[in-house]
Amino acid sequence: MPTICPMTDLENTRKISELCYQTEEPVFITKNGTGHLVIMSMDTYEKQLGLLNIYRKLDAAESQLKNAVPLLDGDDIFQRLRKKHGK
Image (cartoon, rainbow, N blue to C red; front, side, top):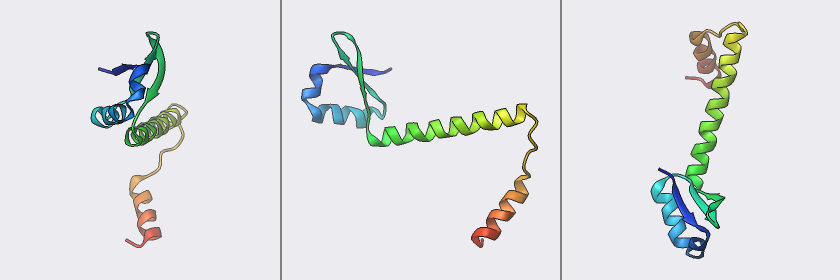
């Protein structure tokens, strides 16, 4: 369930900061009863960006499958990586 706080709670920055880190989710700030801001910890922000990046890559892969783009061989890819990185 999302955490929702009124704009007046921003006066207590320590409380909002702790809330962001405890919930590990965005905190929604309302102004006059309607959504106004979203605040989150840097950790949560980086996780959200990482997930977005994964979703974009998955979408690109699904598009390639639909368009019959030839698939790469997994063993070949790992062999090239080992050769490149010496392992």
